[in-house]
Length: 387
Image (cartoon, helix red, strand yellow):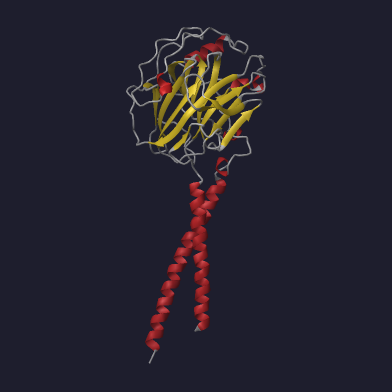
């Protein structure tokens, strides 16, 4: 009798350990799979420690400095040297679960920014193995462009104004194989563009957010030769990610602007209406005088490429856009520093841990239930045999 109870206690202890291991395996893996939301960073810590990913190519830099212009406190500063070797300086969050989110941030292009006829990516939503960014906010010439690469749709969001803070609010409901997606962009409180339909590659997690600068055509493999001009500089501040109900802020218009993209020397139109009260003070800074013209820092492309780029910026296409300045590169080429966390790699290890932990947990619970039933039956039989 003593041996029987000892054996039961040993089996029970093993089952309890299996349950504990299973629960522990599931919990941390699930928690590590995504960025914690709400997410917020204004760089007041003096570093970029809240961003688990960093991608720097060549002599690009990422740092924290005093906010320029009318800004206060600190801001993130990103630079790219036009040396023929530097084309990326970015930081990024981790992945998010699928859902609806509001991405808010302020960026600042200084007055000495030189218009560049190809795309400078300043915000990307990136994710999924062997995919490119499904959504890109870029500066092309002197226009803001929203590019939904997964559908080839491009939206002209208006003119770029230098020497002022731009306050962006971009609401995204990520599409899934069974649910539609949407994108709604606001600049300084005014709606400037929207997209309805598929907006990501629908991989295992929703895309993560990257900020900074990426110039695809500045890669040496594309034949770019440095101009020797001063580095390109961009600032970011007040970044946040918050969950929102699906359909929040439904767009009033779904089509992009049909106006022709002006040349880099065209004067900027009048400033948009002031944003509602309560928005960032950086969003209501009056625009500076019209900027001087400047030549592109790279050799002039062929007329065909210029025409194709201008046409693509006017209206969305039902097929992926053919553009040399938007390569669909692999996800693994964007996070090349030693701080890259496990979740930034392939999702296979996390899936294995989750599956193994779940199996152990389920097996432990089933066996515990069976052992208890068996012990109850033995106690009942023993009670019936007593005199």
